[in-house]
Structures are given as C-alpha cells and as structure tokens.
Amino acid sequence: MSEFPLPNVSTDLNGQVAFVTGTTSGLGKRFAKVLAACGAKVVATGRRVDRLEALAEEIRADGGICEPIAIDMTSRDSIRAALVEAEARLGTVQILINNAGIPDAERAIKMSDELTDAVFDTNLIGPWVLSCEVARRLIEQKMPGRIVNIASVAAFNISGAIATTLYSTTKSAVVRMTESHAVEWARNHINVNSIAPGAFSSEMMDGMLSRVGDISQGFPRRRICDPAQMDSTLLFLVSPASECVTGTVIKIDDGQGPR
Image (tube, rainbow, N blue to C red):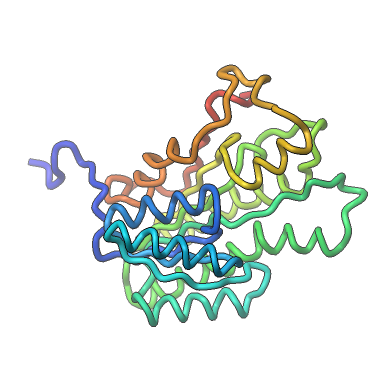
C-alpha cells in the first residue's frame, strides 16, 4: 500500500518560511500573496520600501504573515544582510523564489558598462549568491528546501525586433544554474526548478509594450497573460507533490513562442 495520499496533492505551506525577491510589483507581488494564502510565512523583498510595506499590510489584513525587507540584488552584502534579517524575524528559509529581474532594453553594442553590470548582477549573480546562501543554511541544518528560479522563454528564443540580447543571455544562464544546482543539492533534498514565463502582465512588460507596441496581436491567443495564471505551477513546485521534481524548467507562454 502506498504511503502517499490519493491524490498526492497539497498546497499546505504552514510553518515554512518563503523568501521572495522582486515583490514590489507584477509576478513577485502575486507570488508573495499566493504563498502567504497557503500558510507560508513570507519575506517580501525589493528596493521600494513603501511598496514592500503596503504589500505586507495587505497580506496581514488577509490573515497571513509577511515581513518586508529591503534588498539590493546587485549587492552581495545587501543580499546576505537581508537573509540574516529574515532568519531573525521568521526562521530558516525553506522556500526561495528568485524572481527579481530587469530588462536591458538596449542593443548590445550600445549598452553601457553600468547597464551591463546591472543586468548581470540583478538577473544572474544576485540569484546565484542568494541560492547558495539559502542552500548552505539548509544543508547545515539538514533541512529540505525548494528553490524556484524565474527565467523566461527568452532563454530559448529571441526576436531581432526587440532589444533583449543580454536579458536573454542571463535568463539562459538561470536555466543552466537551475539544472546545475539541482544536481549538486539533490542529495540534500533541496529541489531546484525554474519557471520560464512568456508575456505576462508586469511593470517590465508594460515598459516593453510602451516601447514596441502591442505584441499580443502576433500571438495565437492574442493576449498578455495574467500573473494569477502562474499560481498552480508555482504551488506545484514548492509543494510536497513535487518531491521528485528537480532540475526542471516549465515554460508558461500560452503558445506564444516557437518550439
């Protein structure tokens, strides 16, 4: 007889601490609210403190637990300090959502060193450092964990009509980072997976639409997706049901891109 329930599905995250980056808008804000609604104690992080505090109050008003902590994903000192503060307030982080990211919005040969560094640091180096810090603590305490990295379908295909060369490069590296960390930490029961969204409503997407126009009319379903349509995938990857799933990248693009 199986030790697992029928069906083996649960969204109960009670008692777990979830650390989410980039929660001041868009996908990250939605992720924080969804995890809190399932019982997780959420650490909401980002640069804009006023928005973090507003999100925390919203989650608390709905009966959830949320601590807002400012973080600069381009600073290793800031990343490590935010994690220490999170632990002091809520305990060891068992769920990490690496969501923070910025676009390049510039042709490769025109990019300044400052913009190049900012995109690499925010999209790749910061998530690498944070993942390693979270994993190190879990391994030391012999605790299981879940890490979900937010990549992009731009990791797999790119259009010459839109300036996303460096963004695509960093997101492709996030996919490989996911696969590599999954292999290294599998023995420690830390599952590392990635979601690669297509065009979802967010501040970043709004900025791109303002520059290039309504790209949705070129999609099969002629729409920009809503962050809520990612809830089920996120919850699957952080729930007990995905215990055997690690090193996987799930594309959620509504059939928007080539295969």
